[in-house]
Image 1 (spheres, rainbow, N blue to C red):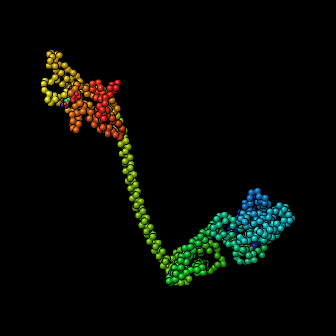
Image 2 (cartoon, helix red, strand yellow):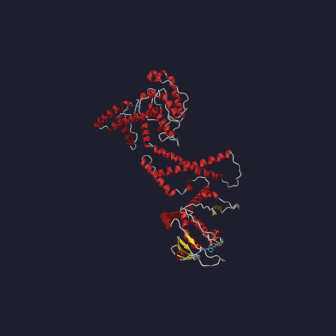
Image 3 (tube, rainbow, N blue to C red):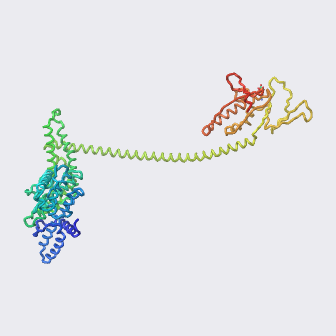
Length: 627
Ligand SMILES: Nc1ncnc2c1ncn2[C@@H]1O[C@H](COP(=O)(O)OP(=O)(O)OP(=O)(O)O)[C@@H](O)[C@H]1O
């Protein structure tokens, strides 16, 4: 990096460059200035004193010239630093040749380091792999001294020649091998390196569009002897040459370069413009081709051959080029008119304003007048076709625009409907959620109540007595002699008074107590009513046993089974109990799963008999007595 003082000098040089853009051209410094980087600090300070000294004498021209020369020297050094910085960056860290190139070399150091061509060839091979197939590696002698360099002249000449040929083939800025010798123009070498750097950066960025060095000129072969504008602005500034009147044209070119200084943003815009032109050609050029190929004269079946295809393609390109040329000419005419033909003293701002004005005119007035600019082989008919096609496109575009609007409004209606439905559903879901929560609360409280009820219910059953004895009085059977009944009295509290007609006095009557006594006229339903609550207790997990006891013919079977199974009204306790059992278990099916099994046995004469046996064996179980 330059020292602070040097940097200040460079900065001031740059700001001077800007201020020169609007300055009258042709001012030439009279004093030469030796471009020595290491002498920049001293030259900077000495120039300050000189400037002060000269101005005290009032010779402003001399001051300006000297200042300009100083600025050019600083700028040349700055460019050289840039070139060196890039070369060092491109060389591998620790490469043998990297130490040859100091960070801020003098012009002589710069030339000496590059003279053997080794750095240049290796860097070029990195930018463009394989550009130089063989690089002669013999750098040691060249750096020792100028004599050493001479000893390896043959080797480095080969490198340099290969480098210059390769750079020339790439259409980049080049220089003469002698420019690296004493008295040569190292500035050209710097230009070549910076040109290579620019090319490398463009390639690294993807290589989009057409690469132009400095944003002004497409690099082709550089004609040194050419005095054309292009070659002039391509030629390098020679700050190490003596600055006198003979280089006034160089000064002029330099200032033009500064005037046309184009930033990287504009380069990007240029690239976009190239893309736009490609799009334009794809869109209109190829449409033009289709128009030419459309059959209008009944030659649809005419076979095409390479020659015809080439001719048609050439015509399309030719017509398209003419269209662009017409635009260019029109632009030139309008600009000249706008600038009133006074092109000798036009400022950049005026030129830009004229272009803006032209653009506005095109947008406001002429943009629809496409037919004027369309060239279809000079045939007015084709122009009309293009105009009508253009009209059709506009109609179609309008139609599609309307359809699009309709679709848009339909979509908005559907969208709002959908939103309404969604919001309704959300409301409904919330309502259901609320309802379910209520049901959950009710359900849980219901189960609590149910449990309480179950406990209380069974407590009641228990309080009624875990063992209950009921007495049922059988009526006289048909055909029985209806003599006097021994039943004297049946009380409500479960007492029954039995009368013995064969006895007298207090022994004639005896009172027996039961839980309840059923008279002769009691129905099967009434008898079961007292037993029924116990069935629910069974399903609540309590053990219940109901059995009938009595002498033969007393009515046990009648009470427990009933006289007629086909008549539900006469069903006894067993059937009614089973019916309730199934009904209650069915009502609890969502909460409890029950298994019901039935066994029917008879104990008679101290023998147990299975009454549900179906094989007719009349099986007995004397061993069951053990339970
Ligand atoms: N409450 C009643 N009302 C009308 N008839 C009855 C009643 N109880 C019993 N009977 C009748 O009395 C008769 C004897 O009854 P049942 O067969 O039920 O007696 P049992 O106690 O079962 O006799 P066993 O022990 O011999 O089997 C039957 O004809 C029956 O229909």
